[in-house]
Amino acid sequence: MLRLIITVIAVGFIFSQCTPDPAEGWVEHNLIGEGIPLKVFAPKDAEIKVGTLGTMDDITIKGEDNYSVQILGMDAQTTKMETLVLDQRELVEEEEYFNAIEKEWEEGFIYSMAIDSNDLSYDFRHIRLKGDKMYVFQCGMMGQNSREVVDRLAAAVQRKKK
Image 1 (tube, one colour):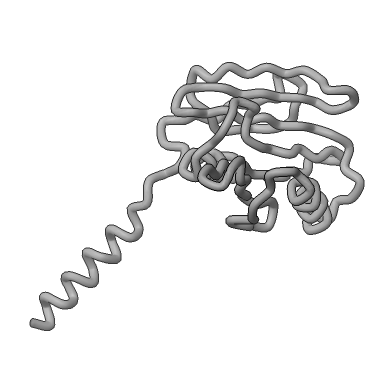
Image 2: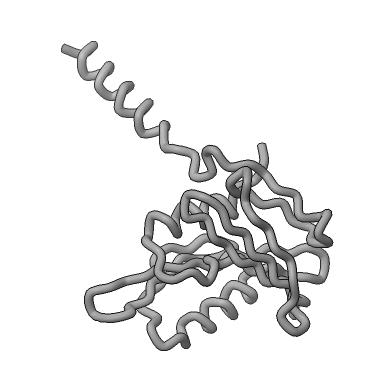
């Protein structure tokens, strides 16, 4: 009986450690060739466009598996990550349809928007500092996103190459 209990616990532990990699099937793209000092995980054949919005860098990455990420690069007003994240949080909380912060981590958060009483959409903000610039990652501008899609995108942009 003790062996059975130990076996069940061991199998449960093993399965709990087998969470799928959010970026499985995606590859690392180095944007340095585009003048952007970032590496991001995206589908192999992702379409990457680099432009500007006023004084900001505007990078859009689109690919299969509902992959759509926009990265805005701008001068950082501080190097304190906590302040940068708080500033982003205040910006999204001011949005008309803001509903709630759903998940937080040191460099960002996932939030929901209530488009109407029956329909939630999700987005995220993730910040990276590179020198005196900050890069804000968020979902691309292609409509509503499910929580599952946003969880996967947010986890992929947080991922560091091993």
